[in-house]
Structures are given as structure tokens and as C-alpha cells.
Image (cartoon, rainbow, N blue to C red; front, side, top):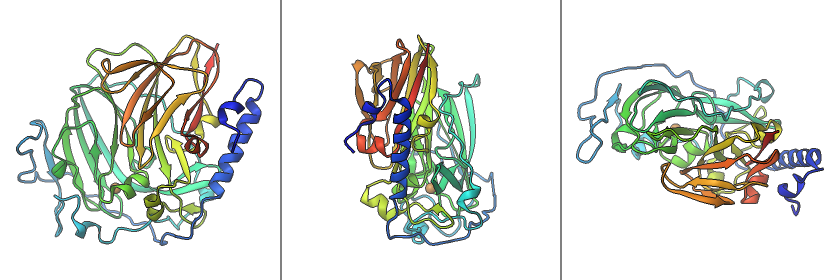
Length: 386
Ligand SMILES: [Cu+2]
């Protein structure tokens, strides 16, 4: 534990560094099991019931944003107006349920593309996400039973402009209540972010007031369990005047708390989430994925990282070995900029923009410099090609 990734990434040792890091991640992932084990349950086949009538009083009252509109397709016999309605959650599982119809060997790995997708020419972005369970291979040795938006962890990267309209619909294909909380929205959360039952849909509209990178996540109680099971993603909001042209990447840090595997698939363990000692950390859902398959830019590029932190608990001390950030935007760009920064903490539930000019060719490790967390997977490599 005395050797740091920074030391190992010195010139002359790249292969040793890569092998050693992978071996460490392997050992870390194998050392995960605790006694608590999730219940084995068959994955349900949630029926899809979409659209629906507008709920009376669904619009904003009092101080809510005037553009906010909320629709609900079915209310049932519970109180979907409340995220904390215990009748919605009294059967909340203590771990995510493993899909026992498959095995880990049948779950392939795919690298999560960190590239910021282009912003749409349209000023209204219509999103329809489903919440659903999915088995996700996060490294060679670990498959997790995740709760997801759109079947991946993180969910899709969304890219809009300040002042755009986002029309969002969530359809719940999971087996328990879920919801959506956009940190980029100013909206009455009691209505827009409320939980919906399996098979239900909810639609709401918002307009991001500020630029930046914002977390979105399921806000169903207990939020710790839903965030810790994979229900999060990033929404990037451009300022009205576009920022300087750059190579742009999105990194969302998260933690994994693994239960004992069934068929090789690890449930995600609520008790361990409460203990807040993660087994694994990741950028974009897969520990060390950008170490195994680095991010490439070209010498002379301006590089912009949109770093969001899903947590659910720990912060991200973002740092690049051998580089300095020319600019870190603490809040909405282009204001709130600080310059000449070595490391900056992105709080759980936060997002910040980090810029560096890739003046020097070489291999640069980006890492959560809270090194116990970096060693557990919040690490990758940026290759600056000459
Ligand atoms: Cu959820």
C-alpha cells in the first residue's frame, strides 16, 4: 500500500504500473464479500403503462417555477405525492436482487464512452428514460445487480443549453418505486420528483437556470439505496455563449458496496452503504476502465472534464498526475473560475468543470487523490498524443 499510482506511472514503468494497478483492483474486488447476502429473487416483467391524464394540482404552487408541469398516469392506493410515504417503501429490499436467470459469465463488459455528446440544435430536449434492473459487468471479476436508468450505470449523458426546455418522462420498468431528481431543475420536488410505482410513468418539464455539470438520480427513499444501486447520471448545461472549443469528457464517480455473489452476480448491499466503506470506486461505473482503455487527446488540445459525483457518500479529490488545471469552474461557467489548481474536491451530489491545456505529450493518470478511493478504482489515464 506504500506504492502510489503516481510513482508507478513515472516514465519507464508504464507496463509495470498498469499490471500492478490491475492486480490491485483484482485483489480489491475479490476481498469484498461480507456476511450479509441479498435475497435471491426473480426479475419481474414490469408492464408498461404510459402517457396518461394530467393530475389535478400537478402544476407548481407558490414559489415553483412557472414552466413546471407534472403529469401522473396512475395513483393507485398509495400516496405518490410523497417521496417518504412509508407505504411505498415498506418492502424495500436490503439489497438489489440478482437476476438468477443468467450468470455472470453471460454478462459482457462494455466501456462507457466518456465523450460529451454534441448539444442538439433544438431548444427543446425530450427525454424518455426507463428505470429498470440490469446486470452490469464493472470489471473482469465483478458483475453487479444494478438498478438503472436506461439499462446502464451511469445513465445516458444529457447535453443541453442554459434556458433550453427539457421535457422529461420516466417510465418505471423496475419492481419497486423509482423517481427522478434533476439537480439542474428548479421545480417543486414533491410533485416532479415523486416516486412512481412499477408500470407507471411521470412527465415533467424544466429549464436549466445555470450552466454546469449536474447530477441526476433517483430520489426514492432511501436515496442511499437507489443512488448506491446505480440510478444516476450527468446532465451538462452549456452557457449561453459557448465555451472555448475543447475535447470534452464526462466523468461520474460512484461507489459500489457488494454483497455475496449469486451465480457470480453481486447484489448491492444497503447495510454496507450505511457503513460507507465501499468495495469499489469508479469513473462512469467501471473501476479503472480508462486505465485499461485510456482517453486520448492530441498535444495542444484544450481538455475539459465535466466531473460529477454520484457518491452516494464520498467526495472526489480530482487530480491529474503531471498536470495542473488551468481553470476549475466552481459554479456556472464562465464565472466562478479559479486558476492554477492541483486538486479540487467534487462533493457527493456536486459537479465541477476542470480544464487543462494539453501542452505536454505523454501519459497522465487522472485520479481521486483520496488515494484509498483511487486505488479502489477511481482512476484512469489521459494519453496526450504528440
Ligand atoms: Cu430508484
